[in-house]
Amino acid sequence: DTAVSQTPKYLVTQMGNDKSIKCEQNLGHDTMYWYKQDSKKFLKIMFSYNNKELIINETVPNRFSPKSPDKAHLNLHINSLELGDSAVYFCASSQGQVYNQPQHFGDGTRLSIL
Amino acid sequence: DQQVKQNSPSLSVQEGRISILNCDYTNSMFDYFLWYKKYPAEGPTFLISISSIKDKNEDGRFTVFLNKSAKHLSLHIVPSQPGDSAVYFCAASARGTGNQFYFGTGTSLTVIP
Image 1 (cartoon, rainbow over the protein chains, first blue to last red):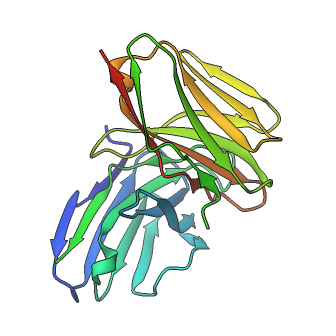
Image 2 (cartoon, each protein chain N blue to C red; image 1 turned 30 degrees about the vertical axis):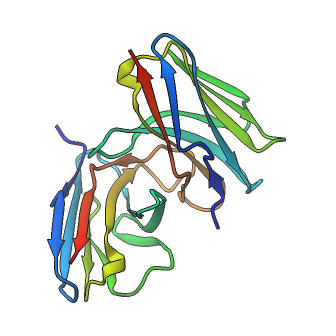
């Protein structure tokens, strides 16, 4: 049973397109996250949702829009894709908005922009 | 501005020996620290954590040491096994910032049989 699952695993698309990445967790957690890992392997948080409410919204272009239909799902929609969006995007979840609980990660979505 | 740094991109160790992975941080407000392990094409997996009220936490072959005055933590793996070959990320968070983790850029560990 996969705890945090993301789809698709790979996404290759043209510049200017709109795409979505889906994330689901079956851990019963109430907080979910999106991270971006760039070419330098730097893992940086983009968004955090708790019970469908946006908690953390780092400096991310507004072409990126997270959507949380329920606490088990956090999807990421990206409009007008640019070359610099090429990266690996990780979804994660944890229980509560506490700073001292580990986050559990999905296997990532590798986005390549042509 | 990277608040958590892992200055060694890679490390090679013989099987059975000790692996020591290092991590430095700049934000003195950090009070919870974690190590994650990552295999290729998989997500990071939580390995071990330590609160700032402790200076050591042990879990089987894995021990994390925290030196608050030096703003330094390390992960010791004893004995190292080939299956430990992976990228190791350290991360830190601070009370009052919600659940925002700051990650280092990782150290790739290779354990040579």
